[in-house]
Length: 347
Image (cartoon, rainbow, N blue to C red; front, side):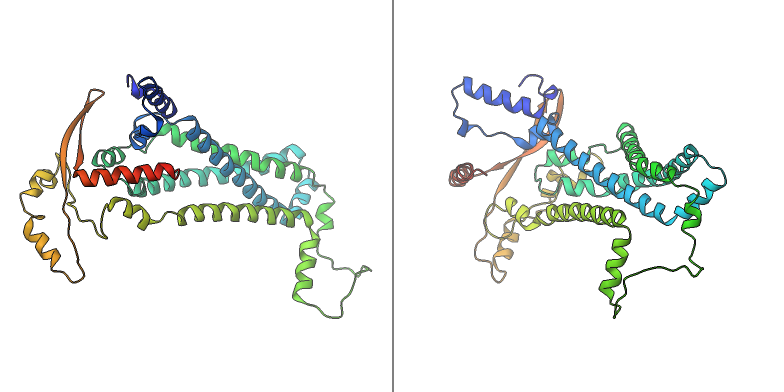
């Protein structure tokens, strides 16, 4: 494909399908190298849309959570706001005070969050991204992926700052509406003022809880809503992580039997050449004697061996090293039948 490095993921897939159609190749006989397309092209519209949607949901949840934190804090400080209004603070000054409080907290939390997020991602990215990949060239591409990007970090910081600004907008309006009378109204009741209340013969925990929740219905609803959305996000992420079955991913690489043994080597490591395949092979770690020792282990019924060929690949004026598995005619036919069944099942 010409200029494949300048097309999107969807564009390259569409071009391949159009080429197959011109050559009268049935769609069922077209097998896309999805991993290569994903790593060698720009993301497609579906990938971008999914990323934008997830980011929007995260921002929405963050706005609700931050708003609820400020709102609950303001309810507890109504008396203080009333005193400030009583000594002459204007509505504009009240809004500025709430806004400065949010910006000070953001100025501390956002940089800390970016630093922790970057180093955490840098620590686990290679392991997570290359978890199910057995292709050396793909693993090398993942390892060489640069995670540090000033525009991305700056964009994340600005987005977080905008989220805080949107979150404190409503609390600013609430604080500005507090009147000086609130400073007196929220004082402790030390006088003997006659009040009417509905009494109970017995004081129970459920009754006290219901009275506390009903005393400020708006605060209660916002707290329940915020905690509910936070729980939804937590359960969703936990469900996604729980469905990542390491055994299932590992089984994909085991073509036959229950165990798969291979040499842990590099192909073109200039820094540590002793780790390269040609140097490791000289040690005879996987020779016939090793196979015989494995056969003598209790419980082993059959041992099959296979070979790989290391090849040099040139493309886009770059050169890389990859591997090709050498299979027999029998194994190849079995592989084709497996792919056909997977296509028929819609996998």
